[in-house]
Amino acid sequence: MRTRLDIDGAAGHLGFPEFADEPRIHGILIDHAIRGIRVQVVLRLFLSLFVLLAVSLDPPAHAAAFSVVTAALYAVWCIGGAVVVVRRPAMMARYAWVALPIDLLLLTALAVVASQSDEISWTTDVLISGFVLVPMIAAIALQPTVCAVVVVATALVYAVSSALARSSNGEPWSVVVLRILVVTALAIGAILLSRLQRSRVTTIGSLAAERARLLDATMEIEERERRDLADNLHDGALQYVLAARQELATLRASADPVTLDRVDGALRDAAQLLRSTLSELHPAVLEQSGLSVALTDLASSFGSRAGAPTVSVDTAGWPPGLRTSVDPLIFATARELLTNVAKHASATTVEVTAEFDDGRARLVVVDDGVGLPADVDVEELMRQRQAKGHIGLASRRVRIEGAGGTMSLADHPRGGTVAIVDVPAREQ
Image (cartoon, rainbow, N blue to C red):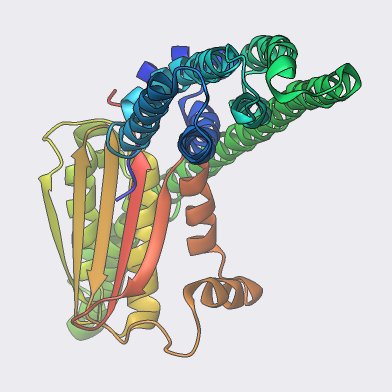
């Protein structure tokens, strides 16, 4: 399972304060930064291999043992960093900050020590070639200021190391100057690349924030329309039906009892259907009693329909009385999934499970119906349904993804379909 970095703990280390109040967007930026750190780890492993081979295959004439031991320790450090990134994601931001200065200090120390030899030696010349990897590693960090400090220091150290190494490898000054210019150009390019990458990621974050705000506004409008429609049905159609039943009661003494019973039964069914529709459109129980009770009420509403599957609800993993920021979203998604099961699955039983753990809400709906089409993948099926005007499930998924969550559909091993919704949630 993919490991998530604690956003609050990483905020100060990965450096996206402008989105600190937008957890969903901050999470996107943190994810990009994590990917950059992983690329840094790969490049750093190559750098450690290069340094170790350089001092082993062509040992310096001066302090060879020191150089080999230092290179070996650096390789161990890089491997340890890879382990930290894989197993301790909460520490990877701190590791990224510390690793860059260590890269530079190590290369500088080895190059300076190797250049102390009075004999002709190419070790220093080989080692200082490793400096070109440092700007590339720094550029990936999405920290233009840190990158600038590191690459400027790299260019200066490279220039000093090249000048010190000139006597041991016999290079002319013109070659040394040209190489320094190349590394300087690489350093400038690394700074510009870091700024460009930071700008792109920030733009992505801004667009995602705007998308999230639009989705929130859409959901608010939809909820308001459902509430208004529910109020109109309650104050209009349902009241007329109830009034008609009362009028029938006064006619029983003078009219055909069989006819009256049929009319009364039809009105009773109509009233029950209207109440069920009202509960689905605007579940007052969701506001009054929470998601657990609302899902149970929703299951009863679906189960009472003619020909509908039996719906069971398991909310043992949802703490009693818990209210979260995504309760309406989870409820609306459950309602849409049950509607799809009733219309398309030909199922006899449906299991609905709701759980909340460690700041994440989870909804699982499993049916024993016909399952998904074997010759069409889920994405294509969603596109086909949207083309036919069935946008309910697709709109739910868009809202879930806008909230930073996921929704997946798959065949169940025992037959039927399983839908899983996982979305971050805040307790309220």
